[in-house]
Length: 145
Image (spheres, helix red, strand yellow):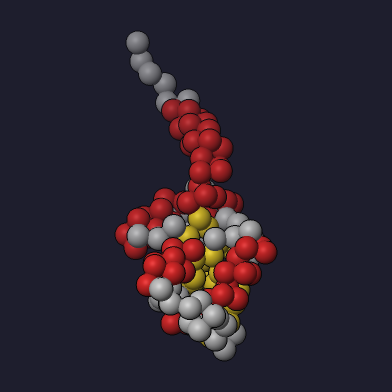
């Protein structure tokens, strides 16, 4: 059986406009208890901003977060994945691109975000499913003695 991203993704999505300040983004992240926001440019997903972007690109450089726009520091391009992609495909893309989160998008619509936290939260369930599937497959074979 194939396990897809839509089975494990977070369905709650928070967005912010690219013209918003980094301070606004940080306040929204705090109020929503999230470590990232999807950045929209004209209503279209254009990038993502996370706590590391804020720390490395603003705070550590001594910039004023109220004077820096989200669009200036967002991580881009926005790398996405189809909801029907496998967990393995998602992991490959995330490792290849050095990202911890990947928006789940189909036909321009964001359905959720798949994160390393989602993977860890469901890892035991995922492993159990894989083992059951493997045992089911092996039980179809008879081993001659």
